[in-house]
Image (cartoon, rainbow, N blue to C red; front, side, top):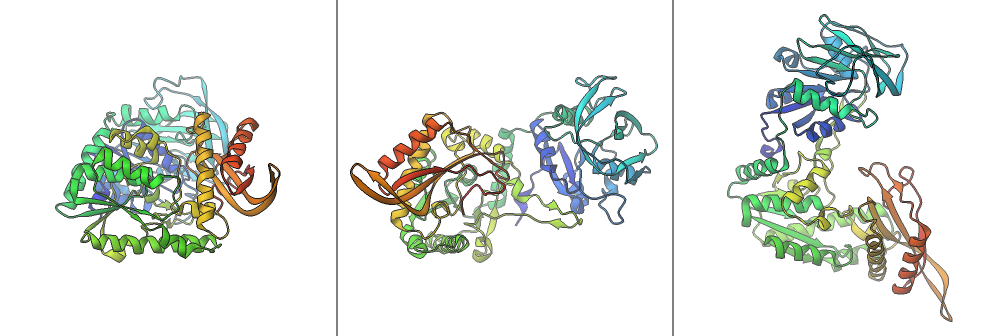
Length: 523
């Protein structure tokens, strides 16, 4: 089933994850340097090392203490292989412990910015750090190395980390107490680039064009003459996955877009038009809006809404799949961050594999194998691949849109009338954002129709209509977010348009809640 999960990249870096919150950033920096890498949790590192045969290995940081009995360790096979190692923070401590050094707790903890003084030159920072000078880095550690293994020397030091950069140049083992992967270490990306290029000796040959060609072949090998169906949501991930699979197997792919009546203005129509006109894709659009809305009407509980939508989606999708004669494979736009197993503090894997609410449970129910051609990519890499496949920028840069759609932007009971009012208000709001040139600056923006009616005056008449809330946030990954600081002219102009053009709204408010404590969506 999982043949497609791992492509073969002969020149790759393995990252062993010891549970750091920022391990993904190491992968980002390595890929930005044009080198393929994978993250593997320490419990599976032996298998990962054997499978990948990497040319170099990076040990991540982690929350545990190497002084604790049973704390995570790196596989012996990595040391026996002779490949270069870069070990970061906890990685430094476990490397030193495993090959004859000592680590102790109870010294000065060090969190935040520090200055590292360079004592000796090294290929690790050749070209940007000079001997005798100090450079800013980011520290986050409680324990520290107190005795280095044989053959190691200190080539960089900081006030609370005497062994800040310790290396064995002969064995090509490089260790840092600080975190080069975070933005707070300004030259960290250069350091990681030097490790993969100058020390490991890899070329910058991992490109999206190469990935595309390789993945097309992989899909053909996996699917053979079988049929694939893809639940197309209209989002970037499922669209790019569909295009890539279509390039690989053509008419063996059927895409199904279920319009649940909870999409934005003209969304389903525009998605279908784009795919039919530009890509000649075998795409069926199912208008199931009556079925969904009739079961959602009056439902106020957000979780009940989500569960109803998920259940109905599976039912509709199954029915349509049967009509086309079924399929052996189901395509999903699963991404790398959804796949990575993070490691919990206790040392056990806390598996955080998210399935899109729409297709969760489908493979098991329908006895289908998964085709997931994006599962080695980060979100912005998917966007690069989308461009590579010819998707227009206007589509690639779209704001995220939740699976349950407008249902969770209509707190309280849903009605057709409310959804129509919300759709119109949302379209005006996004139109004004685009006109102001702010669409690409804002991570996500949308209107919310509140279950509140207020008194207003229009002409000589009294109105009693709904309140519309506007939301806009800036974010990197959606985990945290700040509200966007519009100027009041923009808000005033947008509010006037919504009240004038949308029958049913007579008041507009702006949401200035960050995440945390609020969520981005209202439900």
